[in-house]
Length: 384
Image 1 (tube, rainbow, N blue to C red):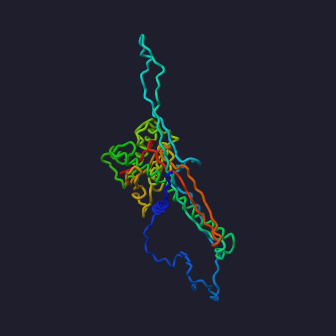
Image 2: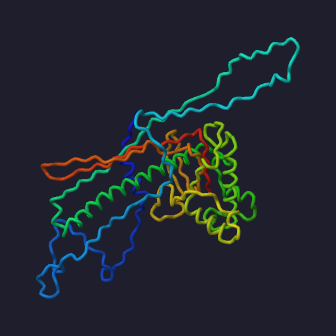
């Protein structure tokens, strides 16, 4: 199998998804205690002594560890895995065509052969890509004891270090899952090409077409209750349409349908909150306007430096088929459960004790298969 090292990619995506904002110069040194980071070369200054005899060093009264678990926020597209073998094979059969029913075309003296062989049409698609990265961590025991008052404090410190690695793994996994979704969005938008495609629906263009004289611009769309209701109406229609057999909602033009329980809807948080405020808050019958259960993401690719709508609603990707898609205004994506996912997810930790220098090395490793299947249904909703 082909194995890709993606540690550089996940480090870069981490920078994108956390954002790096410009700072405003404000001198708050006399108001807020922001703490001091002690480096190895830092000398003890006069402020470290008591205010009575001024020769006793102040002791640490309480130790607080920044040790919060991070659960992540990526869509739930995790699938099953397998221990042996490499390739994921997906087999599909074509829907047969109808032929003449000869029972109602009988002619005297005519022979009707019941032994004609009709070969079924089937094909297979293979997925054999694997991505991997690791996060290293070294931990000492004897050398760090002098920094703590008891074993409980030291264990809490070591636990915090491992928790930080776990957060690093989780946020990078979230990034990779979102890139799997973003690739499906990019391929769908890049393949749709022309306006009016059922796979890439410009909600704003459709709304303005039916509301001539009352058009809405992109920057005001999510604050317009009428547009938000119309967008919800179109999404509800699409949910119903995907349940019927069609070739219109997948890139490769296969006959596909997606039952409601196999439909996966992901909405941008900006749009999701607009639907809650403008569709549900001013009606007594919320069930008539409420969108079906959807997963919500705060952004598709990153926050930018400002969390602006243009940043959080944007993707800028080059897909495996060579399409380069830079698009903002993406509000949601609806896809079949088998259209994309994460399979064979494997997270593990290996260790090694260095007896000469007396420290432990931990390597947190992760492998997974992130895939898109363009034979399955996928629809992107956007405004432009």
